[in-house]
Image (cartoon, rainbow, N blue to C red; front, side):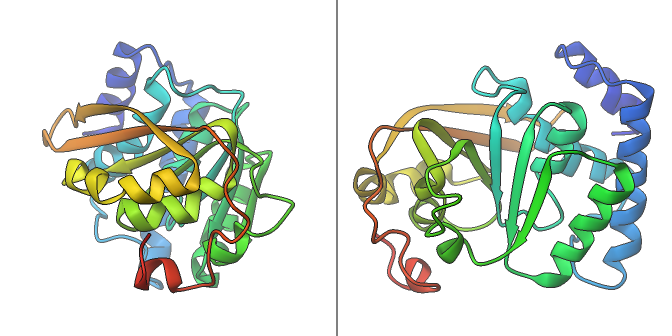
Length: 237
């Protein structure tokens, strides 16, 4: 998917990007390739693949009725900034908090934010387990998302404590989502998440399947969750 095809496909879905926004995506791509030579951010570096499998993929969430450009969004384990930074570029009014456990990635993300002059984006170097226990952030977000971080039974414990009651947890999955959903049934019940729906998309060029699972936070998460760092992964609920 070329940058031009990226712009046209999004326009067909009702998302119109300005030339300034397209220039921001081009700069983002350049920074991604440059930094990827120093630290491991992604195995996908060809321009056409980055635009489809990172940028367009990230914006799938923004094309759904579950998303609002006025949301207060938290991206857990953002890595190279997906999906939150493409969403921020496309929807400038979005307020974003990013948490990632690796300082080198945080440095990259801050460079992107500064270079693109993105406002109302805060980046934190922290483990999701400790971040979710921070009163400043616990149960504060309208929408919490994550992409390629962990299986859903683990991811639920990292993300749902951050979602305010009535807010949404929407992880982005590439495959085996239904299997993970069954595995996570107990965790969701304990943590206060209610499964609403699954949204399926196919990427325009590769045809790769993408699954978005929509969960609503229906009750407060017990204070003992998330457990100490490493425990959710070793002992999933």
